[in-house]
Amino acid sequence: MIHLRFSIDMEAEIIKITQKQHLNRVHFLVQLVRHALSHQPNSIGIWSKKDRLELCQDGQEFNPEEWSLLKTLTTRDNQDHLQSSLTQLEGKHGVAILSLLMNFSFVQIITRSEMLHAENGAIRFETSQAAEPEAISGYRIIIGRKNASPGEELRELKFYGSGSTTPIYFNDRQINEPIHFPNQILVTQFQNSVGSGAVGIPEDEDLCTITYYKSGIRLGMKRFLPPNGVVYHGYWNSGLLNFESDYQESIQNGDRFLQHFSRVLYREIPAHFNGLPLDRKIRVKKLLFGLSHKDWPKHFGNIPLFHSGKQPCSLSYKDLIVLDNHYLGVPFQTGTARNGPPGFPLLHPEDIIFLRDEQNLNLKQIRGIRKWKTRNFKPSMKQGTPVPEEELTPDQSRFRRDLNGLNPFCIFYFTPHQSYSTTDMKGSRQVYLQIQHPQVQEALQLYRKRPETVSLIKYQLLGLL
Image 1 (cartoon, one colour):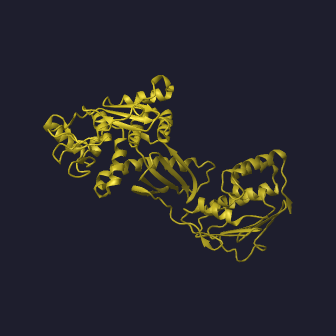
Image 2 (image 1 turned 120 degrees about the vertical axis):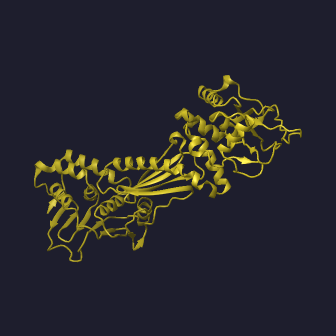
């Protein structure tokens, strides 16, 4: 029987290495499941009570190299190899087992051929003669503790481990299920030799979100501004079996594949657009307007994104080009002034800004003999008062300047009052944004971080009106 004592320096290093396994008082169980999954089991069983926890997996027997390293470290038979053994174990899943020996007063590990028994710092290794005969495959881990919380352990496991394809049972109840990926307009799923994943176009968010898994165990989540305006949500489930202290390779693989398949998904929009309900068509249109590349007409020019006076989403960009060639400008009407033939474009403010600013089309608003049916909205003097330029902060001033530099036909102002907009007889628009509105403040924060996304931010702000 050996007592688990190390030199001060060695013990400090072991504590530093193993503390990552204990983000909180129950997270060690997630790391034990990771260790079990590395042995490719058919199932994992966990039985938890306040004073005892047992984990069994029916895959491969305990990794012999990890077992040897644990034995070298805990028995200290070879003092010269203690540091090298610790370094090697740090790069393996077995570091989770070492953390048990450092944090619990009673630990027992049973395999078909060997057993480790640790109690109050005293460690004993035994051969197959003392091992339990029913431990015929995989291994069993038994932990003694006081005043544990099985409910808290279950919540931790369900959050981190519910995406595992290997059945995981907690107190005889299976807790894992397929990874959920809801609230997406279009989805592409994929699988390859290093993992699997999915990307989707979200219903209502304008930030990219990626959730990372490894063998179905959650690693974390990342939210970021969309590159080149390509807004997508995705998840990546790494299939790498090797241990990773920071999961760098798994995350890099996920980023690479998700970026690739997000571009594939956007190229598939034309094939699926007509089958979408109207509200999703409008959502997709606004996302497409935020894309920034010169080949936009080539990829999306045939999609019927624009309304006509006859029906919504019935005209494509290429239809507008035909009108432009025929009339030396694209004739259009607005929702408040329908004076043209019903088949002519019925453009909304974001359509006008996109076509004039991004595509440089010559738009001509139709003015018939009949009087325009406008709202004839006349703002009060209080509503129409913008914040003076000298009262804006430098960031607010630059933000307004960049918004106004996008299109001379749409001028933005900040106002302390309610947001609204007006349009003059020439089709030019004045947009007044309530400076303290939460979405305006959020847009300003995004602009501070990524000024080059101002074109995408502009369309988000127009959605306030």
